[in-house]
Length: 580
Image (cartoon, rainbow, N blue to C red; front, side, top):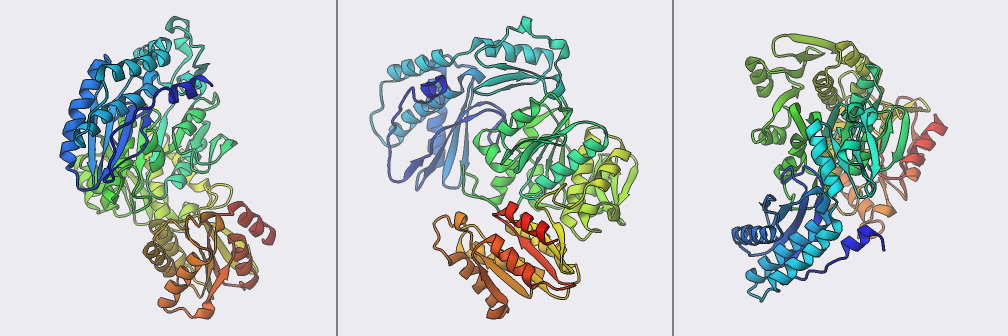
């Protein structure tokens, strides 16, 4: 049994239970997140007909009692109430995050006992057990390095295996069990690199890639993390969903890195938190209904709170770049303590007008130009027609993403010529922006591939595509089975804004998630027929690749096809390239 496994299984703390109370497994928080900026542990408690204020009062008393008994007088506790439950968290030293799980569970043990009127365990014995684990986990060398790094004004990143100080070209990495003393570290060669965080329901991957293109145009080695891969320069370090702290550490430890653009998704923020507090700029592209119901994030305003956790990563003087066209972003911004730069498609949007009157930087679309206002003067940067990702302005969501990238470039002090160059040379193809409105040609027809999967992103893509003239329109649709019947119906109606002549409803066996075979395509078919399509116009395919092949076999010159691909992406791309 290795050390981590030994720590994870060191204690089993049993708490009182009831049918109307459900407690999820506690999880470690390694950095800033939804609740606060501290590392520690959190427990999610879901209840029915229980006074949430009572739970908060019990947590306040018992968490404080447990922390004090362990000698953690400087550590804090917090409660967040949501519809149907609470998040209960405690903070902890960075060398005690596994122990913090047991600390939180111990505090909940006493809360649950009092809440359910049951006899708790022996307080002193349970505290002694936790102290035993704390002693095993303690790493004084790590704490000494953290303190020294803070004193030298340089970032330190920790995980179960490695510790690194500085970023990229200014970093050094050590095994966690072979750490140097602060006196052995060559502090002169260690430094941070500029970091941008990008989050939002949609657009974050594209914005991240545009920002990396701008950095590259400035002659610097850009690195990015995303839901698709981790990349430094032209080298992909690994493929997969790396929108959490693990991907960020992988990137920030690469010695070639000079500027980092980190895409961060809801899951990473909520599960573990964000990896650093040294960002120069953070972006929230938008907030929309997607993946609700986890970790106490049940509503779109809740999701906005989670996305705005990126504000806690900003270093002194850091910039929070926000979409002034998104109502949920605007509402949450009122609670954000940060220097905000707004961006908008409307030069007369209220937040843009207020920013200009107040002498605050902002970015907007004006008479077909991307414009940056520096607080005093307007700087027309480039015509929208010269930004390929916008499809001559038809893809308005990508105009917004480009404006967000302008704010990032400006916040990082990059030259306007480099911002223009990065925007001009970033193409909507499978090389620069795979899976985001990539265009192919087949038999005289235009074929677009996009990975849009939620109502917000599908609506944006279909709006852009509906502006393109075509003889006939084909669309490929599929949905994951964990969406409700109503969600599948509504998303299908959103996709029909593309005004298709032919709909291909696709089965995805790997995404059934409890559904029966044929159930999801049947829901798509019924929604399309309800909206006026004939039964002959709604076809069935057993897989995305089969659906793509069916459409390619039918398209003729001047037709337009939109393939919304959720799975078998590589196979669909390969098919399109073979048919091009």
